Length: 85
Image (cartoon, rainbow, N blue to C red; front, side):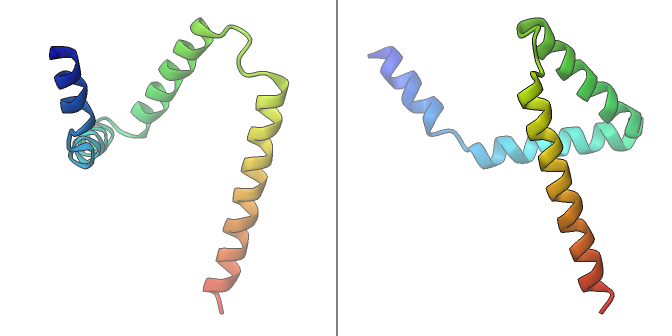
């Protein structure tokens, strides 16, 4: 019964408040320590994944990432042209 109650409590958390708190924490930290802190955090996350999945990123992961960046660049290019009109 205790496990069921704990699961219900977890599922019914105020997830929006948790997201807002997390966003505020990281925004303040990066504002205080500068953009290099964002890069440091990203590198730590990359290292963590590599320790758990040594083959990451795979060739397929890299290709999918490249396609996502190309798509984003195209969307940003289009948005820039639209704003100028």
